[in-house]
Image (cartoon, rainbow, N blue to C red):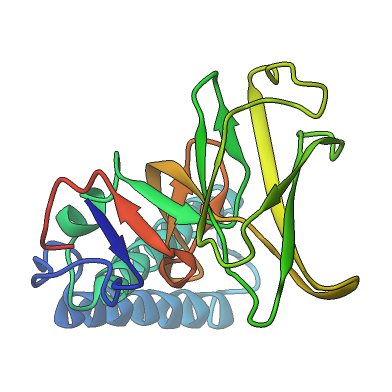
Length: 227
């Protein structure tokens, strides 16, 4: 299955409110403020001749820190619920194991690779440069300038099979000898993890690269048609 440019929502369904509710968070915040007020009043009104014992002060600070951490944890949980919006964790988790088409190097392991291209209007000549992880050009292939896809058989410019590794692809389009434009080829990578960064879900591929949902050009191997 191949779904192209049809990713509007990363997940569907309501979020179970298992994290902190606004009322619970407000209660904890209120307790925190009360604790702070009482501690400040105690220090301000202590008897100068019999100041608060340092051991007690350290214990109070430890309690202060514990309350502060609890408030922070509940706030983060509330933010996570907000991030999920109209979706749920199960919906996001369903992306794991699928393959997404993105601008990223692809793993060559002996099998031919499918590269998605973006043809440039008016081009009468085109070629694809294939580079290894070190940025070295291992092959240059002439392609049909109107083709939307390109299959790399893994052969280098010398006719040998390229070693296993990650390779990137860039297509250049010409009108005569004039360069009209260049663009990276999109390849499929397996999703292995979902991360939340800056309140935004990110798809992590097998290479460790991270992508937002709007960077995905296609999906295949989808287990859940509801995505």
